[in-house]
Length: 416
Image 1 (cartoon, rainbow, N blue to C red):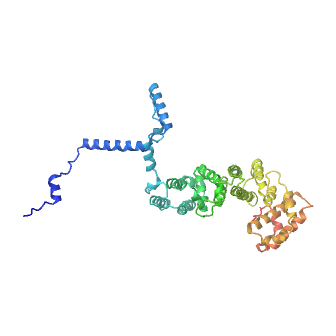
Image 2 (image 1 turned 135 degrees about the vertical axis):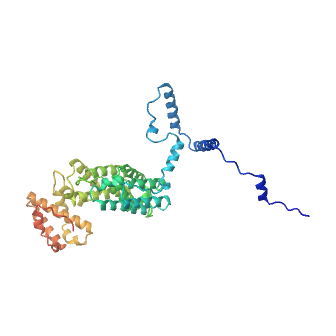
């Protein structure tokens, strides 16, 4: 006769008992044991640094011989725990990758929605530089829709740039700077960084790209930092140094920024030279074609800016800049440039639009300068060239008499 063996489950019910519930004291002891064990393991993985240990030792010896301080240590007062483990945990808890969207009653509901979508995408690992551009553009457009005044100040108060920067660092994208290959991102991000007082971050990116200028020259992948990336970042930084919420400011800030960037970028490298040249040409345009939109810059900074451009082989720009010197404008370089290019009136319609506009502005400014200074020897043929260019471009379709515009007190808008 075969005796059936009882099922394992029934034996377990008969022999094994569920643990009795812990009382309050036992629960506290278990919690303290787990906590101390957890901290011990974290201390082993994240030990004190050598400088921290020495600082801690010297601080403890000093505290033994001196009276106890009347206020808590700086780390506690500033909200930064001194232990490496606490700093490690704090870094985890503040990482935007683990953040959850939260409502902020201090900002409009529409902008809160943009922040919520951004935080949600970051938490789910769906954020990309292209989507970050959309987030920054949305925040800026909402600020403009609320009020067109004090845009830069309100961009700074929005914190959108810092939000994106924290994501770049937490996700590791800032390590290789390939996200700067997205040029719309560069333009918007640099604007927000400057508005929020984080311009040193942009200069740090420029310094890293400058150090990699040699390898950028041979990079053709559009998804990675390349030669164009360095040029776009340089121009964006320089442009932001002359932006203001108040009335238009001079280009002095941009001149100083260009000088700093020029000292950082390697001139012996083709990529570095191109970045300086493009940024300088952009400032040259703002200093001449759009000169009436801003106050005059300081003489010293203007002349140092011109000196930077002399080796760049841009004679048209240099000739035009001489006409716009803050205190002593001269026409000799412009007249010489036009004299050596008598065929310019016939070729102007075949030029690229921006070159055509620049040449037209040079001729108009030169003619105006000669008329004001009563240079009878040079004025007639420059005036004839101006008329020939206007006829070639059919500017009469605008119903504008150029002669009246030049003699009018109203500034002539130099645009085609």
